[in-house]
Length: 578
Image (cartoon, rainbow, N blue to C red):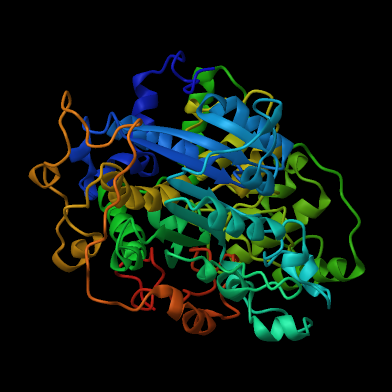
């Protein structure tokens, strides 16, 4: 099975031009050039990065490493993945099967060994991963979860919450060189007032338990801060700052072994990945609009001779009396027919035939609310996620969308249609011409998009990690510490500074058959790690405004959360006000 399903697909110049016009597809060139990694091209043929993905989802990490390895010339493979969802497992097998050695259903089987779907027998994985990428399910912590209303609610009692505990055990047992965990920003939200008991008084929010948690029954320390000999840092990255037309905040937790790099390098990762690389992205490219993505998608699908997948018209479910009264109140206040004179374009055919009654109400109300605020929904390139409650303002403006979820259904006011499943993949930074989508329905593509990492965002973080991981694999230290980049603005690294890397034809200092030499980290002045200041930071950051709801400014949030760096999100532009 080929890794590049698009190799045999004809592509014309207009398609290439469309890709060049979208900055979010140029992240590899922008990031490697900014960090000076282009000087390593052609010198890494004997270097191999071994990756593992837990709760892999769309296997975004393997996709990212494939793009980076093709550009820089190093070798990469995925030793194991785990994913319980059968649709996602089929996606992984179709697109990355030849790159994956072992495929498990659960993280616990990936850690201890179990039935391997790749070999159809029991297998165990070697303890030699350079990079672990984990995205435990976010449903137990999500703001949209109805479970939070229960008095006895505890996300770590949920089977999906158990995935995080298995991930920490994996890190403690396998000890990968670097581990990156991704979670929704709602893990910093305090427990609901209905939650009572010793556990909820001890840990103020899910993130407190993730960092310093201890199992009461067994006494097992499962928090990331309890894993020995690892540096830990955390950051919040915003998708729209990487030229992706989507507003989506995610929390990333990075652990690096202490024998790989100094504490200062790890502490400064948020500044490099969140500020330096996002600003480089904005300087080198522009953000496409939803309309441009849809046009690009139609062009690619025409070349692939494939029809776009749209959501089927769904039947109206049961609507509570309170919801009916809420919709009626909205319509009366906004003057939407049949309670007023306003007529939305969605009241006409054929656009209205794509919507059920609840979705029509949602489109009508949000269309009228935009008009009432002085915004023309068509000219302002607005859209709304009709899969969410009508009371939530999940509106995208100026060619951007709100955060994608696994059940997303985005209605674009112009050209009066739903976004296709392929559009959703592009919104997460995937190039669909490089993927196999055979047999995938809209619901499958929506679930993949909602649960996947955003490619340019995760790409910025993984590229920054490679800036010290690749030299370590060669038995050398990085010629300039990442923290020096911030102090002296020494971008990019020059060819002479990477001169210790053997040129093509020379013997590498570290091959696959030789053990990796141990390298002591360079002693640096002691700095205060993020892991010790996180609790005091995120208690200040918690605010009712912090949510995935779209705001009136069209940026997608009701207010800017105070971040780790200078009172901003790690990925916030330098001109953003607190």
